[in-house]
Image (cartoon, rainbow, N blue to C red; front, side, top):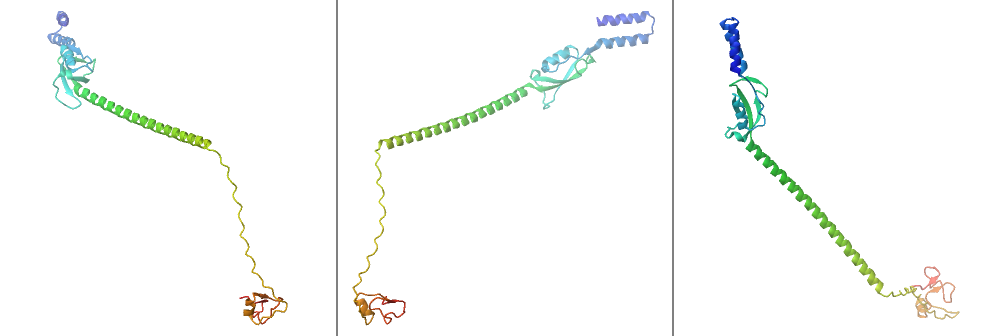
Length: 231
């Protein structure tokens, strides 16, 4: 249909009497318009499908790994992440569309590794939480068992104490005061006693002699303190 349109326009120009150069120029412009292609959007498609869609429109495709710069082998394992020209751009046939791609196998491996790491982390966190809960349960049980054992021991002690007869305590004996030493017997002294010396006083059992007692004399009381023969 496009070729038919071009021929119609060319024929009309020739019939109007225009020059050969003007007719050729107009024909070229019509041909250029008829060869223009609107670039479709292929973002997100696998490279094989994007290539088929673009080549069906008469466009060329150049793909490049924009992540690692690796060589592209199997197109179905790569996904389009960028395109130039962008969707909706009008270009001539045989134009080249540059596609940036990423490797789906690598992305899948990275996702699997991330999922595995997340699962291992979740499992470790769960194991830690389970251990904390287990330790707490063990501690609570130990505390409960100890409290029960203490209560049982206290109950047994109380029952044993209640079963024993109460023996009245005898009052403590009052402290006995020490007996005062008996005074030394004083030998009767005659009213007119006379002692020649302290030896005679002691032999008579009258020592010591105090001033005023029979037999006391200052000759027997050398220190004149009123007590004779005290030693």
